[in-house]
Length: 466
View 1 (cartoon, rainbow, N blue to C red):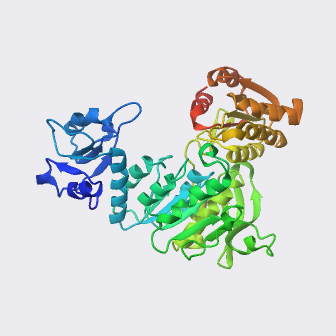
View 2: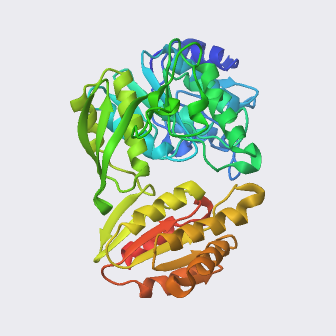
View 3: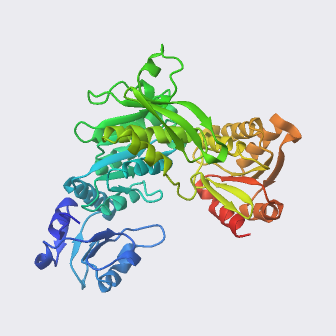
């Protein structure tokens, strides 16, 4: 890891290096918080978690070859050098911020209420047509996950694509201070984390905290079809790059401001969406190989980032058409004659409705397996009810739902469509599975979606293996 000597790390996290004078100029080869991932010459940061205290594993990591540890305690008989700090949690972020500062790399920071992970995958796929890209793994997008992602950047990487997720004010300030993006992407301002952020205006304010920690003449890439984001006229004297769909109303200022847009959309069911992308006065056709109109926006964001970093239309097209989604993110699985739309990682009203739109394009019997959505604040019942109404409007044939709030999804579907939707409600996931698994048959298309705490990955796994 370039520049990550024990001396430099101690200075970066305002700690005291103990017992490492003879090794102070050695560079660490990795930084981890999981004792099981320690290798020779790695540095172990001892975090205090809900389930375990990393300080309990200090002797063990030295036996595994750790170069040093970072801890909050004075060690009586240390088996190796250590850096003592007031807070290992803060030290983790300080170290990541320092490491980012010594790297010669462009950083793309991605945030938004919906579509962060899918957009991250799309951006990384596009940029990999020209650059060596490092990206956030899975959903490591918070104040622990982001530093760990940065620590995996190596000198051969030319661009890092970092997802940044928040749930409260000032959290984005802390994330952006660590990552210092060269390009900031915000996908949309939707209805999520309302318990803390209260309103969409609050969400906008929290997401745009990223702008306070941008690098130099950073580029800002925004969804021009979002009614909140399109109000941003400039950031630090620089105009944003807006993307969106169509130019149906060119007389409206918001449409005139789109630097890049899609037209001639052709939905191809579960095979994706074909579209024409217009930018710089020219256009090209590309197929987004993931179903759903919302994925067009993810592709446009990636095209805009590609444009900022000098990719050609051919490179952007190739990146869009070769993208693959990760598990839990509109991941299509064909097994035993059934199609499972694995979108179970997380959920809010906007993403839930978008996933139902995808399900509605499927052939065969359409079955929605839905659960509670969290952190929606005082109007959570109304929002769940609205999902049920949307499901009925999309003519989804069958609904299996789990959880207290999901009962409102069932009520919305029933009151809108009556018996046109076959509805099954359950108090627990396991009870639902006992009914769902024998119910499924060849030709079914099944959407699985809920907030992460509902544990619906188990539902996907059970359907696949049964």
